Image (tube, rainbow, N blue to C red):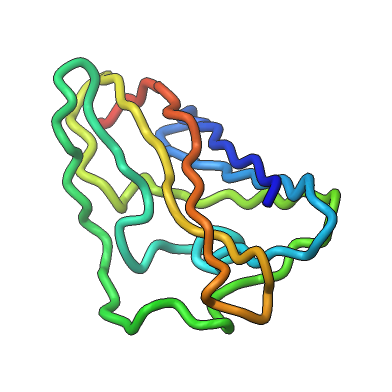
Length: 136
């Protein structure tokens, strides 16, 4: 599977917007987790978010929905040689410290090499991205 995933952060205007981009550089359709590809709010801790310096984990505040492991309906298809981008507002989902602080964020998950088979899940991780945010 030839997949490239990345994050970019827009922390202006008192918000933290995380844009996830995934590129399918391969010849087959793949499955991308719906929760990162299309959902508008978090239902569990999707991102590893840490303070910098110090590497302390930032507390997740948003709701957590208990669920069974991901099924085929929990993935969306991504055509060969295409890309998908989606933005999620995480401003209220994490306990950002008051004032201006620096953070590091990354995302780790799985994609399906065959959109019809859960046993083809392959892990991927984005590079870590450092950003500053001012919490009032």
